[in-house]
Image (tube, rainbow, N blue to C red; front, side, top):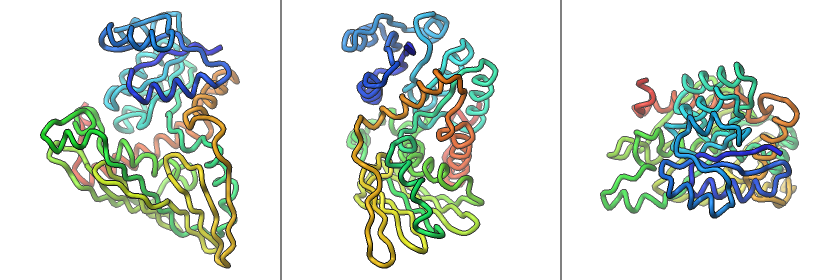
Length: 328
């Protein structure tokens, strides 16, 4: 069994735990929250035996082998380094770091301490995404990757009323690109690698973060178009368009219905309905890496995380979005 601790007690942690409890080898033993009251409340909900309000103390304890980190983006590097340097494996929510410099420090710590560091980006580990990879050749020469993730934030109403919650506060290294755009970019990187150039636009909010935006990424023989937003909804699918056909993806963050439509009108369904909650597969991958003595995922690899981080920091520079984390 791999004994897990969790950092963060929000809805994403709930989703991860509900999925992870179905994964063989997962055992939940510890939780951290800034307040003891919240930590105990969360521990009672899941029968967690150990409660912490100090990350250093938690990282040094012998009650966990690995940690899932779902703190605000700006804390990802700090929290990860605390645990990596105590020899704990780290599964860190996307985006894994505020910038490439932070990520490089995290990778070095993981390598030095011979532990697993993996970005918890669920899309690329889903069976349906693997089906896309395996069938990509069927559409011939790819010419355009067109991905969209635009979802009106549950916290935007409060923002419009004048209250800036964490989701729209640049102190926490967030905004539309980091929170939602990453779901479009990471699959692109896994499928096609690093682009030759990036051009970015954004709709900036008064708080200093991007409410929505777009990226045009150039490769040798095709282009990628990415649109993202936390202030509007979009309902169109994402596509990988090739000379012989197009792969149509119902939802880029959690693809479940994927189809190839060929030039001659034929249609072919890819993949299948998920047998488990969508976060199951990232936890399964992470646990298998630990059990097999491997230090990084071949899919959510250090390299793929670094390329994605480089794309996002270049896009942010172009639209003038800098975080406090970038000044350090």
